[in-house]
Image 1 (cartoon, rainbow, N blue to C red):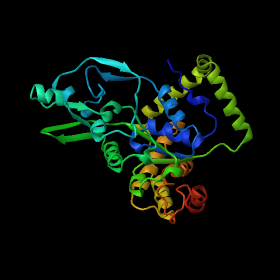
Image 2: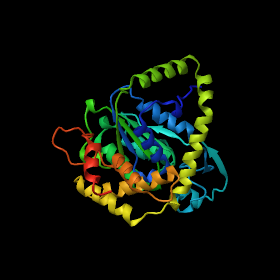
Image 3: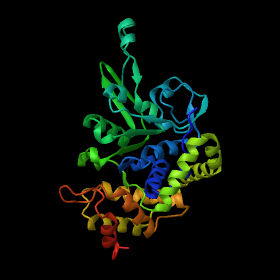
Length: 338
């Protein structure tokens, strides 16, 4: 069995780790886009995050792994076939390959049964497999635009709707969407970029001591993966428990009017178009408050949320990088706001 590098053993890249944690605490954030050069632990962090998440209960026999306790989100099978038995499972990480077709993503008709039995039977796709889990797209900027559109539509609605060849199917597709990309290989269209809830930029560590620690830990892991993983297991269990508790605490987090006002002012000062940025800043701040064990988000949480939710939404000049001095602009915009 291949050992997965522990999330708690990752050195530096605090913004990336925080964005990933918040996105699994609250899948409603719209996922996270991680932009960065090669060799900055993007894929490693995504796989490591999945390994520390706690098990979840699913409806036994359900093709979409419906939550037994959320009847309003059940698929048609769970409603009509009267599934009652529960079973535990690890939260899945589904990877979407670059060469995937629309049928593989959304689902398709089983041609064998259609030809032999004359019945049109729906075969679930990757969106069904990812329900209540994580859907990971490496090099998302190289994925066909129509697939990215379908992916983001399903992520926004929380359902996948397929209507073709006389079959109409709707099933839950509530997943945490994580995309990684190297900007040197091309950018996402602005319309698609805006659909990701959070965006972080990662670069190679500039601190000499941190780079030494990265090398030392990686060589230690490769020498004896089992012993290395065992050493970090207590930290992994503690982190996984904290994530689970934050997710349970999230619905009870209060939203003061002042927090909304501050978020809106920041978005206006930065020239953020539309209202998706404002809403995402608020959702992120609420999730951050749950993660930190606070009753409501304060000015610091609003500012931290803005740093995650606005870099890819700020107005910029042609050929200007997505991460252009976002912290400097935020400092200027919030000097009098907060």
